[in-house]
Image 1: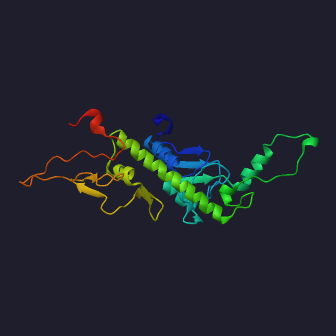
Image 2 (image 1 turned 180 degrees about the horizontal axis):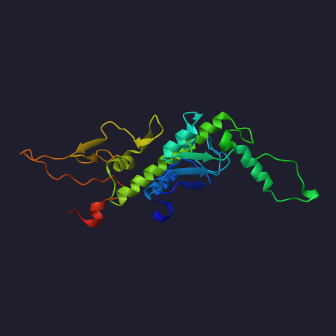
Image 3 (image 1 turned 120 degrees about the vertical axis):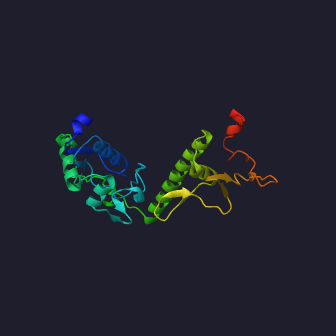
Length: 239
């Protein structure tokens, strides 16, 4: 890869840019390989709206081309993924290309010209959509997203590789911040912190023991953390 890209201006082409996470990684890899300028071309127009016909594309708030209710400028998208320039397909040109690619039909099979479903690019869907449905869709997607994060945190705990934030998420779940990010759910008194770590004091209704102190004021070894998902000590023994 270094031999191909080093010292050259590179044009990267992908089918679309949705959240921008993959595009950002590809651009970074290209720059690490020594490329000069990096351009990124999307075969699809900017995706600015939700897909409502069965494809769990992404929430509008997660779309890189959508920003707080308005479409983000192309220059902003390029800066976000680290590219020198981003080139998007034009929606009308995409429709024309699809029509031209249609297999010719016999006179008996001819049908009136039909438009394409392009709601994800412009917000105009082929079927009427009630505003309440979009709200419901966001709630469903938001819940699914939260469950994925919690499940990932629980697996990290079960494998003994969880950090403090993952432990908090596994124990208490997540909450959505004002900017749409997920963070551990805040529960007053739920966590006590010791030496930069954290011990859950109320997980699944079971209170964890607090750190004990000897009469001399020295800290005694505290009980291992058990968030009722996987008792690591029982399986491998306490060290």
